Image 1 (cartoon, rainbow, N blue to C red):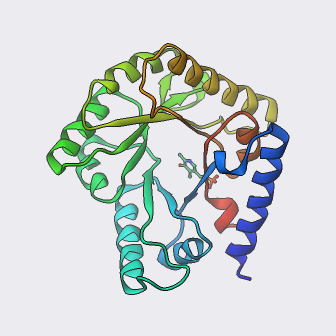
Image 2 (image 1 turned 30 degrees about the vertical axis):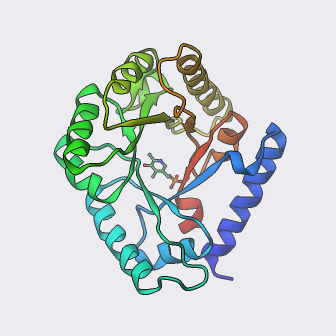
Image 3 (image 1 turned 90 degrees about the horizontal axis):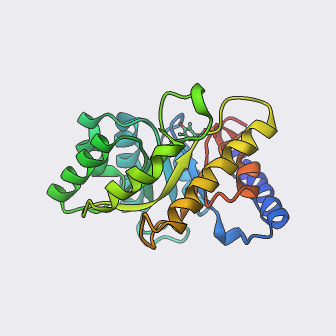
Length: 240
Ligand SMILES: *Cc1c(COP(=O)(O)O)cnc(C)c1O
């Protein structure tokens, strides 16, 4: 087995164990494989293991690898183990002048953290006849992060995005602070979960608002225990 397949299997075992601890099914959690440090070769291996949700944080790299993956899928169409397509998620900070290009390759944008960015995506999606999934990125850790709306502002932004006809608001995304303190990480995820539940309870978003994207290589098991439905894992797969 390749090293990538080997690491993916270990991560699968960890996710399953965390699901079991939390009384959840494995199907309730999606693993997005973050490919920002690798090229098409490595991504092919991941796809061959059955993973078709892929995450990128820079538009230029997204373009390069998305085109490489498309070529691979086209050439190998119909072969066993080759899926019909993949879904790209934009997970990094997105500048408004890169929205048009990002939408060409990804159908999910997890890093929406301002009204102006949401409006820009809505306008561009309308022009291109698209309706991307969007997540609001919330800053669950208070001061230490550059991006993400404060938790107290997420509900209002959700209401505003709900009025935009070309966007599908599907959930919240958050990043835990960089720390080895599991307690701090856990309370950050718990806070994001609360905000998520509040928005649902108050009916600020529609029934498609079902996802909580949190958990990376260092903390995906805690995220599963705290209710994540989407994990974003990169280095644990590609860097060992
Ligand atoms: C890079 C990145 C990840 C994956 O991080 P790893 O620690 O490599 O698993 C997840 N989410 C975001 C927003 C990222 O930028």
